[in-house]
Image 1 (cartoon, each protein chain N blue to C red):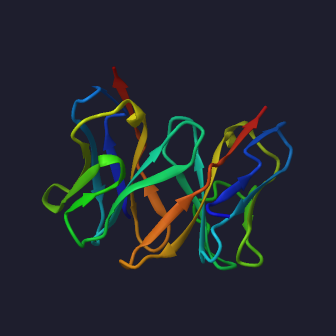
Image 2 (cartoon, rainbow over the protein chains, first blue to last red; image 1 turned 60 degrees about the vertical axis):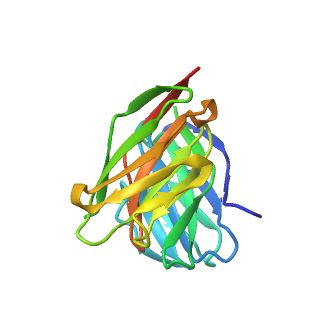
Length: 116
Length: 111
């Protein structure tokens, strides 16, 4: 596809349920990022992959959050035993190294997670 | 650690008026700076980026931003606001890895 896609776009989970959020990056993009955006806030970094390697997971808020990218393309963000404070929009971005020697991140539409 | 601060969570202008959205950065190394726009229920769209090639950066939709090292600022401007500019705007700083965003400024354009 032309851009980053995410599914589902909306997810309602009962507290305690596990959820899995999917991200399809732009084809050929090596780097993939996950962000959490709470209502009225800017996106907060969660984790970052280069190919299949998870290079930085310092932003994951707890050990209930887990991300993987086993084949270096599609990525899944999993949240176990969801809590109400997990309610947010989860954004995925992929990036390429541009001709002016910078990284430019392209964002998907996000998955809005509501935990009831 | 790199960070950005956006001054003003809400900005309201009249259609045709100047738009000025403020962003200050903190970085120990020359930063890469970005402005993104977010429309309701959509992802972030890149407006423009600073990469040290030029201090005045022109972006899409008539927006531009000027990097001022002495003021550690990267304010976003547009000479004449249009109704379609109403959205949330985010300033961000990045290196090779993660991107750090400001809290955002909601721009309202009055007819």
